[in-house]
Image 1 (tube, rainbow, N blue to C red):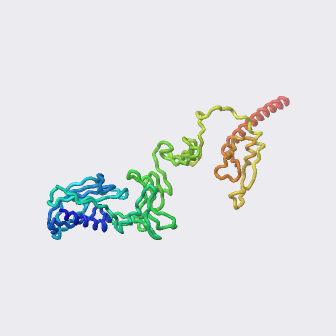
Image 2: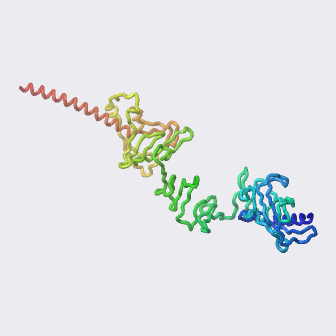
Image 3: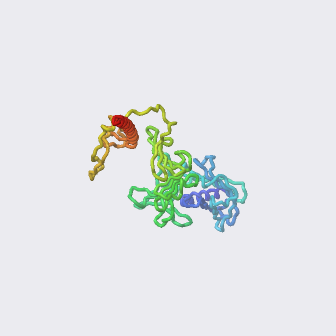
Length: 389
């Protein structure tokens, strides 16, 4: 029995130095030559085999995978076993689930030369790599990151389905610094999906349209959602410094609603007209406005040219923000934080839409003056007529 054990140990060591776990699928060959105590080959002999993969150290009790089976030697006494091929009598653990890079792995061999299950320990051997298996180490990762996939000037990993090429991951097109992920040149109809729970959530289709919440975007960028709130069916632009932002929401009626946390304005889905929120239930401290006609009369319209973004020196007509600020400061906004790259510090802007309210108020005041004048004229006509009599 001692000679049998020695020869088996030599055979195991040589084999795993040459071909240990270097190829897929998750099965590997184990070979050993069996001889009896006199050194004679054990030909055509049924042998009971228990093979275990142990984690950490040769004496560790942590068995990651174990299988038992009955095998028959060849006429030359050669024992051939495919570890993990699914034909074992019984198994413990999963060879597919072994994390090979975590720590050292050892192979423990136990045999019963009579074909039974009274196994004798024939040694434990450390599993080592073969030259081609070193390439797979490029995919390993640890707390410092991964070694990555290495290649030449054109590096890419092909993705195949039923032996049909679909796409690739790597650096193939564009600039040398780019990283690509998507369909290949021969796949002009496929889309690229980002999925959660095996369900596509973001899609880029074959013509470059991008969809969020839809696999079939009909526009360059399309966001689909249900009727509900801004978060259900909207696009939001946030300022993370102040935890505020604006949302754009497509209503079930076809209007576009905009706001911070709720509806502040709407673009009509039929006419495109913009309306702002003006419900009395949303307002407080409501008072009548003072006369504005005299102020508006002093406000002068101007012709001017903008200094910036106006290469053709196009002329415009409007008001000067400083003039309006002196009369109606409510209609002038000051960018005191200088956000958004203003062209001058503390840049002023005007609410021209709000000025329409002043125009209506001025018309009302003029109409009141007209009515007063009409009443006075009527009185004068009465006096003149009475004098004629």
